[in-house]
Length: 117
Length: 354
Image (cartoon, rainbow over all chains, first blue to last red; front, side, top):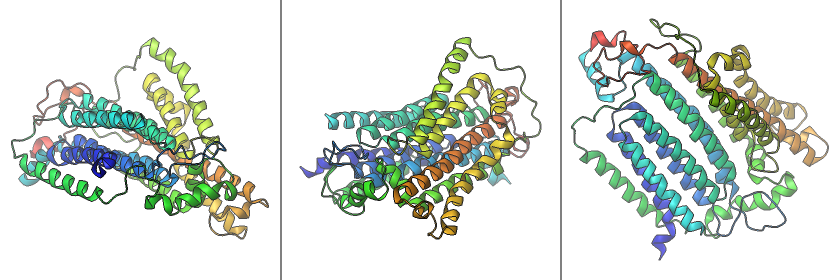
C-alpha cells in the first residue's frame, strides 16, 4: 500500500508539527527556540530521507559498492546544521537581551509591559 | 531491519519532542533536547549520511545544548504556567498544516525509490564522475568543496555574520552595569578533571583527523570545526573560563572567524589571478587532480578555522555575560519561581515600568 511507503516523511511531519505547536502555544521564549530547533531537525530528516536509496550505502566511493545514497542532500544539510546553530545563538542572544530589558522571558509579560507604556 | 530501527528512532524522537513540549523545568527540557539531537544523529547514520550525523552529534548534542544552558543561567529555570487562553487555535493550526503536508507527501516517490527524480538529476553525475573529475572518494566532500564551492562560501559567510550578530547583541567583555565579578573560583570534581585531561587531547586529535582525512572518510571543515570547539568547551566547563581563555587568547580568537573567511575567499582570488574562474581549482596546479586536492584542502582549512572559532566565540560570549550574576536579586518583578539559583538579575528598568 502506497500510503505506508512514505512513513519516514510522515513521521518527519509529525515532528515538525510538534515543534510548530511548541512555538505557537508556549509563551516562554527559550522554549520557543527549542521548538524552532525541533522543527529544523524535522526538515533535516525530510531532506536526508529524500536522498536515501534502497540498498544504497554511504556516498564514499569504493570498488565494493555500486549504489550510493544521494550526496547532495547531505551537503545541504550538514552546512544547514552549522548555520542553524549559529542562528540559534543569535536568537538566544536576543532572549538574553530581552530578559535584561524586561526582566522576564515570557512573551505575554513582555507584551503587558509594552502595552503599559 | 533498517526499517525497524528507523521507525524506532523516529518514535523516540517524537517522544523526546513531546517531553520537550511538556516539561516545565527548562533544565530538564534542555537535557531532553540534547538527547533529541543525539537520537537524530543516530537516525542520520541509519540513513547513510555519516557526515551529517557527525555534525548533528557535535552541534546538537554538544554546542546547542550548552548554549541553551548558558541562556537559562541568565534567564530563569522554570517556565511559567501558560496563560489560560484557548489551546484550540494553535491545535487547529497544527492539525490543518500537518494534514495538508501529509496530503502533499502522497505525490512523493516512495521512500528509498531509486527512480525518484532527486536521484536522476545531478546526483548520478556526482557519484559517477567525481572519482575522475575530483579524484577523492568522499563524494560529499567533493560536492561541498568543489562542485558547490560558491554555496559553501556563502554558508561560511552566514556563520561569520551570525557571530557578528551575537557580538553586537551581547558584547565580548562588557558586563551589564550593576554586576559584580564572580565570587569564588569554580571547584570541579577531581574525577571530572582527570577524565577531561584524558579526553580533551583525544577529541582534539580526532578533530584534526576529521579535518585532514575528510576527503577519504566522512569529515571536513564543518565537522572538524564543531568537534574542535566542543573539546575546548569541555575544557572550559571543567577547568573554568579563564583557563580556557588562556589557551586561546581573545585577541587571536576574535580575529579567527574573519581569517577563515579570508582563506576561503583568498583561494578564489588566487585562482582568478592564475587565470581561472573564481574558485576554479584547476588553475592551481598542472595536474587536474592535484589542483583539486590543493583547492579542497585550503578551503576546508578556511571552513574549519571559521566554524571552530565562531562556535568558541559564541560560547565564550554567552558565558562571560552570565558570569557574576547575582541570584539574590531575583524576582523583583514577580518572576514567580523562588528557587533562583543561577538566575540573572538585571531588571534595571523593568521593575520600575512594570
